[in-house]
Amino acid sequence: MGPWGLIGPAVAALVAMAGYGRLVALRSQVQHAWSQLEGQLQRRSDLIPRLIEAVKDSGPPESALLESVTRARQGALHARGIPARAEAENQLTQALDRLFTAAEAVSGGSADPDTGALQEELADVENQILAAGQRYNHRVMALNIRTGRFPWSLISRPTGFRPVEYFVLDERPARQ
Image (cartoon, rainbow, N blue to C red; front, top):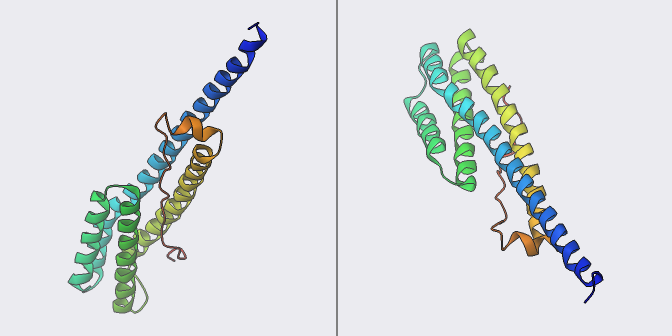
C-alpha cells in the first residue's frame, strides 16, 4: 500500500477530530447558556423574600398564598435536573401570579410603590429568564442535532455525548 492508501484514513481521522472539537464547543455553549439561565432564575429567587415582605406590609394577604410562594421558591432552589427545575420554576411562577392577583384585589388594583417597583423588577427578570431559556434551548438544539446526525453520531456516542434536556417554561405573557 502506497502513500495514497494512508490518505483516506488520515482524512477520516482529521474529520473525526474536527467533529469532536465541534461537539466539545457546542457542549461548552450549552453549559454557558445554562449558567446564564441559572443566574436569572437566582435573581428572581432573591427578589421573592423582599416581595413577600412588601406584600405583607401593603395589606392583609392570605397567609396560605405567602406560604405557597415560599414553598414553591424552596422547591425551585432544591430541584435537581433540568425537567424538575423547569417544573418547579413553573410552579413558582403560578404561585407568584396567584399572589399578585390576590394583592391587587385587596388593594383595589393599585399596588403601593414598593410592591409596584418590585413587581416591575420581577417582570424584567422574568423577561430575562425567558430570553435566557430561549438561548439555552437554542444551544441544546444545536448540540442535539449534531450528536444525533450521521456521521457525528459515530463520534458522539462513544465519547460520552448524549442528548441534553430542553428547559421548558409555561408560555404566558410577561407580568405587567
